[in-house]
Image (cartoon, rainbow, N blue to C red; front, side, top):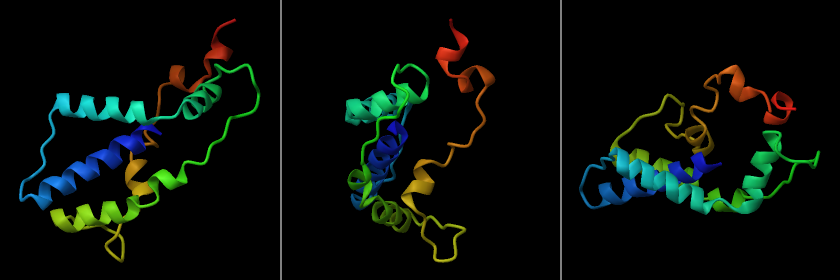
Length: 123
């Protein structure tokens, strides 16, 4: 979830730079600051849900929360950035969905130690 907030902020900064006639460049400190801000935007309920999925929760059910409204305009934002920067997509209509962009690396394989819930590894 923090990835979505990070990439949404990144898109806003890129678009702002291009609107001002500048190319957006981010350094390591800028990326760390964006990530810190993304973590501050997460609601406690979302964090609790992540802990539950990782096996830290005593409650068997997941805690769900509707966060769709927070990212409702992000498809348009993503496409505005693409138009401003001259980027081209492989999709037929030339547009890319924010969800696809935000979760681009979500399928990167994790080591086994990261896939097993903590509660199953420790007595």
